[in-house]
Amino acid sequence: MSIRESGTAGLYRFLVRRAFRLFPAYWLSIALTIPILAEARPLWEYAANLTMVQNFFGAGDVSGVYWTLRIELAFYLLAAGFIVLGWARRTGIIGATWVVLTLLSLAAAVLRSFAGIAAPYAHLLFLSLFAFGALVYLVEHDAQRRPAWIWWGAAAYLAVILIVSMLVYPAPGPGADSDRKSTRLNSSHMSESRM
Image (cartoon, rainbow, N blue to C red; front, top):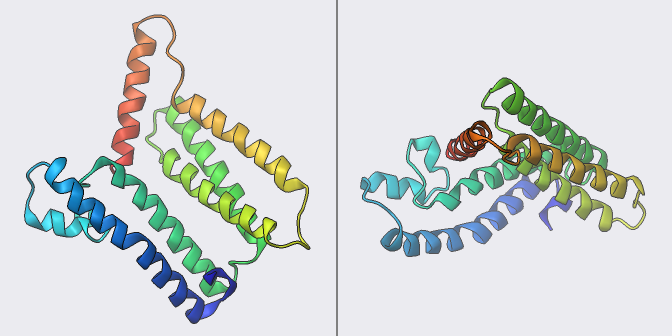
């Protein structure tokens, strides 16, 4: 695995492997999606979609499910930085990143729910899931370091995910006000997803 290497060589291997893993399936998906789902749009938007960073060019996603790629690419950029700095195998740094991203997603959910601020809780929460997965991988593949706190951390993490979900997607209660609030939150999540 390329995270075992650091510096430029490790970064190169990491990026090449990710590109060969992601792009062929993504391009096939676009080729199958365009004739079935896509609405008429300028040719440059279709070309921009081939890059996976179409939103940076001002183009919309050919398919709504592609919004998740921004989160995956953001995590790969974070991982690339860790590889260059030699931090990719440092459990403490990966763990701290996980905790910070989790707390930021919780703070964003609180801001969104109580202050009406359109904070990007979903992106932060999904990035924290990637960081947690990297942490579990490191802990499970290092027989000398299997701290018991990882499982307590996982339990706390699941609680935070539940809290964030409840804050952002409250169960509709009786009356029209709760239905409107639930609809508003769901539609604002969809607009956040397209950012």
